[in-house]
Length: 523
Figure 1 (cartoon, rainbow, N blue to C red):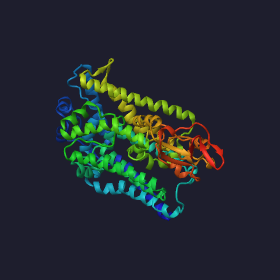
Figure 2 (cartoon, rainbow, N blue to C red; figure 1 turned 60 degrees about the vertical axis):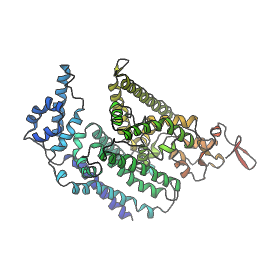
Figure 3 (cartoon, helix red, strand yellow; figure 1 turned 180 degrees about the vertical axis):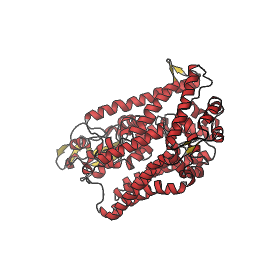
Figure 4 (cartoon, rainbow, N blue to C red; figure 1 turned 120 degrees about the vertical axis):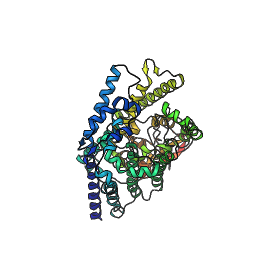
């Protein structure tokens, strides 16, 4: 079985290296017909002739060279238009978004002519190797449940060299995805056939991301099913996040596009879905007729009615641990790093300040956006609404949610985004803290202070501190994953939904007779 794991690891690494190497494969040559077919009328007027003259009959050895040439020309032209105050002529795409379809069309590499072979040698090989590496765990590890299995002696899971290299890879991936998509056209070409089959459209970098996101969750989900065998709650929870990601976040939105309907992830809720109230989205939904209006109403009802109601009944866990794609990736790909979340009081203080600041930022941005939408005045207190949106999208939607939120898994734990950045988590957490039936009850009389609960808490909660004092755990950050309960060797912790008036008890347990009591409540 160990030999099988080794074979799987080798296959995974070969596939990963092949996937990474695709960035440097092939030649790129842009023809005048491709330029004319892709450019918009405004882009043709500003750039058409110069672009054709610059790139015609010229071959580039990689996507990087052509992309840089295109972005330099686009940026210089736009800057000249702005200097001349020719605002009607200014092009409002980012330079990379302008370059992406041109570089993709220019690809003359074997990735385009032999897409299936490259897909098998890269993505498929990595996926198959990953599964092969994990499956023998069923026979190698005979014990059920979760245990301290050497995570602090593993270079990958304790900020060792392997973990640091993995973090660098993830950070680089997100930087390329968000800000340099023209560099990764060969990756995008790999999933063109699947995109055409689902939506009838060529793949974009976002389709590639959605596909990889879903596949990684499914592969690592197998690991979770093996890890949690014998724990029905954890297995059902894992199955739930995999279902919602695969169906609601990946397949259904693509099928909607194929049916000429607006793209929408029905489980994504404002303010996590921060551009829901942007003008382009509102206009698109309203213009789509009945189904678009339904989507608009659905989105509003989710955060106005559904979130408060479900959070009152079930706590934060109904979304963050059962539905959310961010939480799903954290619970699958990020699970090996959950013990790296800081349990220090200082980290908790920073967490509360930062995450609620992001929520305020999201609310202010949305109010400014709606003000501009209904009044036609795109300036609020002298600040352009578009700049507020752009700043939020760059700092929170891209840098925080992607680069830091996922790239820092091997460095800061798997819930960095959920703890410090997610505005929806902050919104739900406020409701959970002050008006919810959810709590984690503790039987302090049975606690042996082993610390497993705190070690494995991905949200940085020092669970043992509460357990030692027999206090119910009611924290706005708690996502109710239940892992603290699963790793407890004495059954001290229990996830419950009960009367909210009995949720918090600041007194330590009192031992009297044969009962352990928390004031009026028997634990």
